[in-house]
Length: 59
Image (cartoon, rainbow, N blue to C red):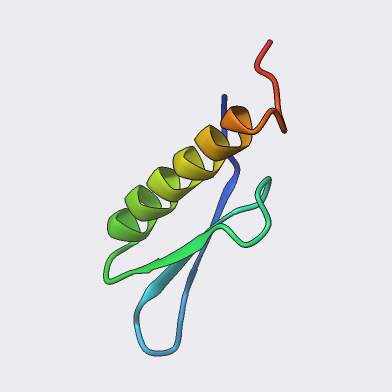
C-alpha cells in the first residue's frame, strides 16, 4: 500500500508531514526525513487500527 505524503516547512524551520489518505495523520520533525519517518509510522498505526476494527480490507 502506498501513502501520499505532503511535506511543508514551517516558518520556524520544522517540517510538517501529512498523509493525504488519512485525515488528521500529520507529524512534525526537525528534519524532512524525521517528519516523513514519523508520519509513516503513524499512518501504519492508524491502518492497523482500522484493520483491527474491520474498517478497511486489503485485497
